[in-house]
Image 1 (cartoon, rainbow, N blue to C red):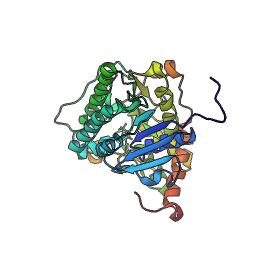
Image 2: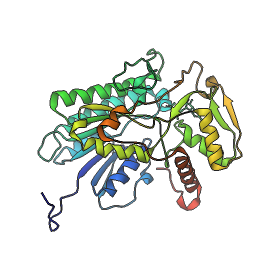
Image 3: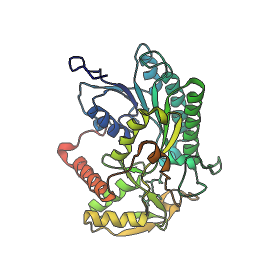
Length: 344
Ligand code: UDP
């Protein structure tokens, strides 16, 4: 049907949980640019209010625990799409408080999926994206990681693995809702995601290295620096999300989402020094000092992207150097008095 200019289609109504976090805020910006009407729910546990525009006539921000917010929204609100990013994120946070991590990641997802079952305009299930993590692969059985690979975790006495396990349970739940209740749900397993606005306090390597490089401090590479990762710009990552949600052929499926360009952490440090023209030296720090004795780092992590390429033709676009320069600019801006202000 040709759109009637006198009666344009109403904006899509979208719910984003965890929308003030690093990735959530980039997604919200993209969806606002698309013309959507957005409700963000976030308890600001790790997100920051200032990651979102202060005022926008198509953005509503609800500061609340997700379950409380859903109970309130459940009284009459409908949505066309739901993006579930609210979670206790990062291995470091999880090691510090496994109870909170498990309760948040599993408990809130149960509530969210139940909510999603009846929230479309017709009162039926709503298109929903559940954000999972490459941590679901645990130690991995082969590199690159493919969606249908077996997973291998360490013992339950080591808290680190509860992050991947809690995300795996989320995936089981989403899959079960898709099968049993025809919930149009898509799951994405995010690999290392980087970009402007990411903070280093939860251990993420790129903002930590960039900050050290900007300050001329030594860059601390853990272990021997030979471990490899693939870093994808957050703006590329979020660009895939609405495309997956909008494509019925993607519903009920799991997708790796990230870059497949692998580099060692030592190479990352050198790339950052070179790109920013820094005088920082690079030094190695034993894992036992950086984390805790017995910490087990993943040696290599790379996604197989064949599935997402075949489904929606998505490709990461930005170069690592471009992202590093933008991360540096965002850190400088944060430090400048005019761009400062409270962190939440
Ligand atoms: N890392 C590092 N120095 C830091 C922080 C992290 O060498 O200051 C290493 C970390 O041990 C891991 C890699 O960088 O091998 C990526 O760490 P990050 O926490 O960003 O993500 P992960 O892939 O471990 O989830």
